[in-house]
Length: 221
Length: 221
Image (tube, rainbow over the protein chains, first blue to last red):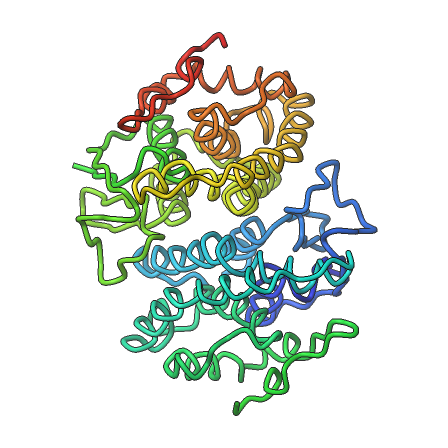
């Protein structure tokens, strides 16, 4: 059986879970907090290895980039990167925007302040959290611009661009850190992706002792 | 002519410059500071579009991920991702580590404090710079572990894993922010990649009014 090692509030893990579900590829799910893992996948043992996917034949894929490019090459049904070079480039541009810039500007800090500090017992830095939420504005406006003129973010079809953006935003939304009232177009796009069967699993994630905001699971919020 | 829009102290731009040189693909080089660009490549116009490569036929490639995967697919001579699935996955794991985690933990802050603040006139936050430099330790030890047991970071041949790691580290080295004395194995690996013709261009980069540390350009440092 294919096995995915992941952590519920890790945006890269969420990206892969939604992606595998869209590709209709089943897997055994094993949760591993990135900061304290039981499993050493290889001699590497870096935090870059969540999510890790181990294929049935033992093929080890550490990190979202290795997983996505391998799976797209092996399982060609329903391309999630797009078909033409132009579509693929646009999808990859948007993935880089979220997995690189948005992570560095927003998700990493929110994860550290809200999740990691809960385990270390340190007090969250509320001004840091406010700064991270303020930094989402540029990205939300960018998503709005794309969603306004296209069916999905990279074009006519749902791609990994939507999945990457939604994976990061869903982590913020769990904590009520998305100012939905300011971004109605983004809310419309997010409602559509949130309603897909591939998203169900994400909406059922819970951190112990830290319930999500009331609308987190609502499809009509 | 192929055209690359880039910024000298941007690690993603450096990655692409070294990569194109290793692939022996020539390009016209145009510098664009990410925070104040003259050129709008497409209706997207996000900061994620540095580096941008425009191919001779007009194909637009915004961001390192779009560029690398397109070029590898079109120009198959001298694969820089590796040949087997195993090599490719390991290369992509290491790229993610540097372009994702290392960027968020280290390069982004150093770039902001040392480069952006020089233009905005704000005082650099020296405790923030120290924290970022301290955060390199885990990564340097990881590189040392890989370089100790392999010829190059992902295996026998030079790949984009080495190029990504060296691109980020070279940005820190410009400012003297690498504690080389603590990481002799990493220094040995970096000396080898620094000596390649593909690296020459990077070593000649200069920020106006901010010369690099004296050893920046030295091959024997």
